[in-house]
Amino acid sequence: MNVWGEQLMNALVIGSFYSLIALGYSMVYGIIQLLNFAHGDVYMVGAFVGYGVLSAMSGAPLFVGLGAAFLFASLATGLLGLGVERIAYRPLLQSSRLVMLITAIGVSLVLENGVMLALGPSFRVMPVELPRSGLSLFGADVTYAQLAIIATSVGLMLLLDAFVRRTLYGKAMRAIAVNPTATALMGIPVHRVIALTFFIGSFLAGSAGVLAGVYYGKINFMMGFIVGLKAFTASVLGGIGSLPGAMLGGYLLGFLETFGAAALGGEWKDVFAFVILILILTLKPTGLLGRTGTERV
Amino acid sequence: MTALLRVESLTVAYGPVTAVRALDLAVGDGEIVALLGANGAGKTSTLRALSGLVRPVGGRIRFAGEDVTGLPPDALVGRGIVHVPEGRQVFGPLSVLENLELGGFTQRKDRAFLRETLAFVFELFPRLKERLHQPAGTLSGGEQQMLAIARGLMSRPRLLLLDEPSMGLAPIVVQDIFRTLRAINGRGTAILIVEQNAKAALALAHRAVVLELGEKVLEGPSEALASDPRVVDAYLAQAEGRR
Image (cartoon, rainbow over all chains, first blue to last red; front, side):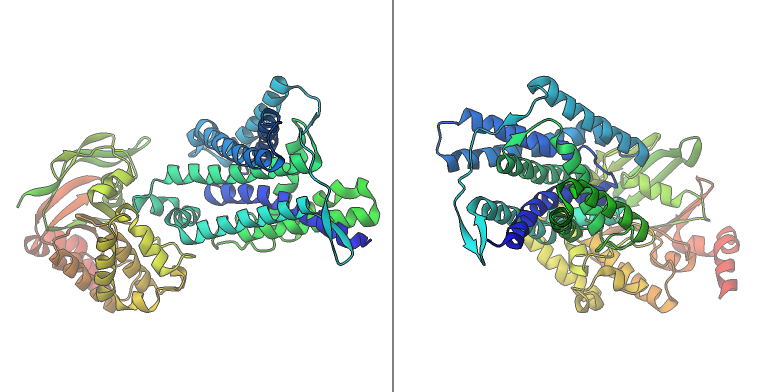
């Protein structure tokens, strides 16, 4: 048994979840300077949609069910992001950042309480069990499920990176982050690009939600709260607005938290994240990869 | 000359402040019109209304025979009204090529047009070709202005709105830019240009309009205005004196 190796895998899995969610925080902040505090709840909704799909498909083979749950949950949360942007944020784009921030907290409460009222406050157990099989890497027991989660997450991030750097809509996103007025003068439909940003960010959070739900086995309407705050911490750690920063921050936070908890005891886990948030905000508010005046999205 | 752009009684206001009052303005097909006036005369506000950045509170804007009053910027760019804003406003962290690609957003399906225009733009501004993969923010002021105009050309303008293209540039660079504007106009693109440098603008334009406190006070062929004592006193003598 290689305990450190297993902790490393745990760190990579949890870091994947943080990174996927942090990306949405960072993209939305980069493009409209909104700290979307409802983003963690989008992750929670993703887990619940996945739960619904898996329950409906309980007779199907495991991989078919998981694949369907993943796709359906990601798409559904992407659409949820579109709806939230259209209803809650777009009418406020010209108003102050504080108004948007308070609205985001309101959206968060609506999502949390909406799910609680519809589905109840108690924990639900995901109707699938991941196979415990795996392999031994340098003496550490690694499950195939862990490898699949990490590979899926990294694959999504590579796709996002290619999208933002190579496609015209991705370039338009980066342009809006620099100068929305000049972007509009290119004939680029700025609102449509902002909506697309919400779709992608929410898609990624929803995919993290369904992966985490299946991995931990239990879900609840408040599950997005702490995770959302930690993903926010991760994006601040990496430099909010920077996509590589969000990925780095997510994995870094996963590592610090996992190894910190291993050294000091599990009850210290959450303390780590928020001590890091305070330290970064005090010492280097632009984060590790964020620089003022440079490209945001 | 048939009017490509016909503005009737345009009024632009920001809250209680009226920036442009009952302005009538026309730009013919292939014509260059200069919009002159002191700071705060309403020149930039006029351009912002024409490109849809602000909604006029009154008046009509007709373009190529169609009423386009109050349309959003993307609809206007699609019809050929392209605004190159004051201060260049290139996307600094994006490469020169990416800036040009974004300029071509509305023409993205017409690959032949984009290829030809890119070739034309490199012919006009060879420096941009040399710096194609550099972040636009690392270009000099003159090069950024070239990029801003080139980016506008990628949108396939029938009417190019230019706001202060000479701002902050050395006289020799300004000459260069104005030469390219003549070449662009030579291909049939109409130009409405706002300029502090009245002398250069009058030398370039066919006609000029002078604004004062949001209202049109003078209008006429450039040569006539260049020798009109009111224009000489207000805009040209001063510019001569400064040199």
